[in-house]
Image (cartoon, one colour):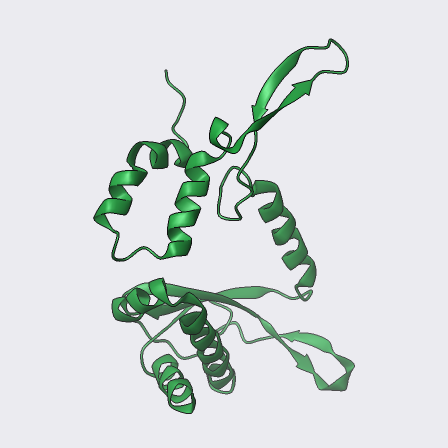
Length: 191
């Protein structure tokens, strides 16, 4: 049985054709990420000699790309980042909030990540604050997902004791439609 292919193997085999077919929609950054992953731990990036201190066995090890998007290079950094974020969490339950983004906005975000995601994060904050002031609303939409987390608690007075929110609110809530897009429109108008 052959080894399961890794993303780098797939990109080495099909990356050139993919770039050719999607040349108009790939950004320069995406091209660079693909190239880095393709070259990761190959002779293209050079190598170094590793030697066992106990037996003296030597082997050539190719250098890694160190790209933050490379699944091989960044597993330790990703694990450390997750540990750091978990240390930032408040000692209360959380719930997962999913904002559904229409395909038309997802297509714009593909090429303008910073601008679109800044707007979406601000709209998310505004929408969650609106929902927090109301009873648990439920909206559905279709398209791409924009995800966030929110504490399932609120501070009580100045003592900063956390009180768990109503059980209605602590379910997974799918938020979409009017409020988030009103917030996005307001942010766009303000720019």
